[in-house]
Image (cartoon, rainbow, N blue to C red; front, side, top):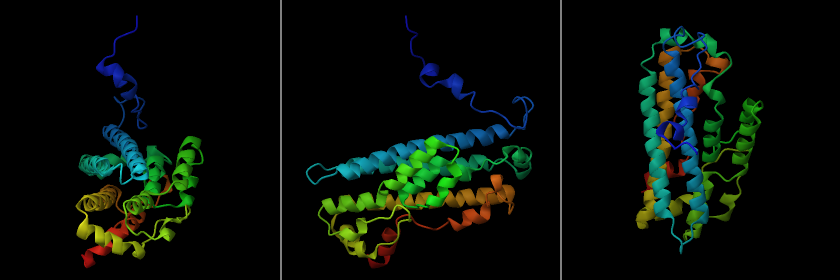
Length: 271
């Protein structure tokens, strides 16, 4: 007779709660106190990245299968709303991490060895989906064939903005065909030729305007998360290099205020 499903067995709680392994001691009884917080926060981030990619894949499918006679706009807005809520939660988690002082972090920082958040394959997947494409980033995942395969697939797929423009084209908007010739080796660039149609949407199509604004919310939320991440790193390690030889806060600053959907921001002055 099979064992009945319980809360613990459904969520795999026993293996889940054993995934936090200290490096500053043999057990949690003799490890540095704040190492547990550090591990849990970053594991939770990876879970949110997994859910965000799950929602983004749904949104990509909805954008690709939308037809005027098979309207998917409500479902696209729903997926975007969930991703936006996840982003807010991720920003809030920085508040928890900032309860850790520089001294408490430095008590176990050297035990992190070469590991760094810079190596997160899921966050790199998300960046690739959003059009921030740099094949050079694949070198950080050569020892992880499964992650390397996922990242290569993301590079070969059209980014979300390209899918959105296809979606607009099928909805009757005059999107120039040349904007769909994306180079998987390069990041998405501004496309001034699509802006007249975006302005037309804002002035005449409330349903599509809502999707555009949710994409702007997503863009802004991602920039907010990057900013909070930079300030958290600065207050924790200052100008020191990051773990694993990563450049630390100085590199992270270069990622600030770089919108993933620049055309949405550019049209503000014309509305």
